[in-house]
Image (cartoon, rainbow, N blue to C red; front, side, top):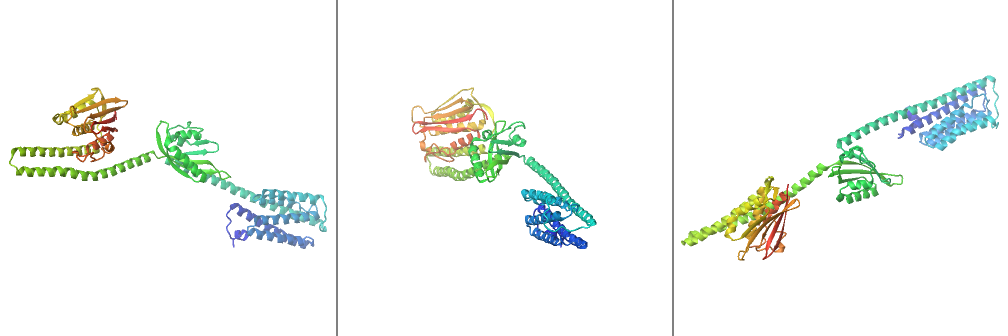
Length: 558
């Protein structure tokens, strides 16, 4: 068995302080037993027997405190030691020779009481520090004669004085040694703790700098928010700015749509006292909003109420924009897949119908000998081929709009409209439709001219394709004007018109407002998709039997 196990037992003592005081207590118990044995031998040698029963009592008390200490009953063990020693020393001081040196032990008892009990109970510690002083004064001033006073030879007084002096000095020296050692341990522990704390702080700061995180402390009861320099820099501010922030100031920085959600989240987690994590947008110094991730924990007071939030702020703007871009691409991919399915179905139908018609006309041509019928069949074949050609052109326009990047240049809107009308002039003349371009020749727009031509071409083509040619003045009017930082382009006709129930669907792929329609259902869809590329929009006003007006809105400059 080791010396340590003998003194305090084999079980583990979690606290270093408890262990050191337990060791000191057992060592004092050993000193008490040793002193009792020493004086039994000394008094027996000198023929003094009056104190021997007290020495045995002293030894018994030391052993009891030793056992209590090993059982982790620290206060009980200390009280047994101090009560026993104070009582015995008081009796010895009362009957011993004034120059015998017993009073030295009152000092030792006072110091021991102060040391052993102060760690557990300050009132008891002070009480047992003052008790030996009081007992010493009583023993010195009052002659109680509790037991008969023994007679001493002159040399015995000297022996007792020297013995008590040596034991008292050694006991006090032992206590001082313990205090010095304990102080050294505490000092070393503080140095190590300070060093560990400094290293931990350095690692924490490195981690914060590595993640570019800003730190804040929000004192809820005081309505004050401290933000670190890194927190300020995340928003573009300097170190001397954003000082003395309050809740109202912080609320102004939060993006309006994120404000209610953020406040609700914080209040819910504050009520539960649980950490929270939030993603929101904050207003930066340059006036723009950026995405940040906020992580916070609540510090509670003695009543269990959350009074402080300590948290970090991390810039996640690039991540959020990447997520938004990914979501957009996923949506575009889903849309493309859906359109592809519809395209395959509709395209196969729209191309198979003219081909079947061509085969039928060829078959009829082979069976007739009449020149006029052959000419009629050839004209019908030509119409079917033009239908297929128009369908292929629409597919090509759609493909180009999807694949090709924007090619921006400044163009005259009237010039673009004139080019489109010129290309359609043959068809328009044949169908006797009056077309007018009412656009200021100086009106200029910065856009993709090829895409703009596709838009106007489809709108004008639809206008005369679904016209009423039996009326006195069938017309198509192309109008354009500047409105703020946008251009409004309209194509108006007095043709067949479109029923209201179709207005919201005519821009869908392959949608036909009428079963008798000869179109592919791609024209207006291509217009809508092309305008999306040009950051524009389109609206329609139409009444069956009166006509239609399509209005395109385009930015003056992209």
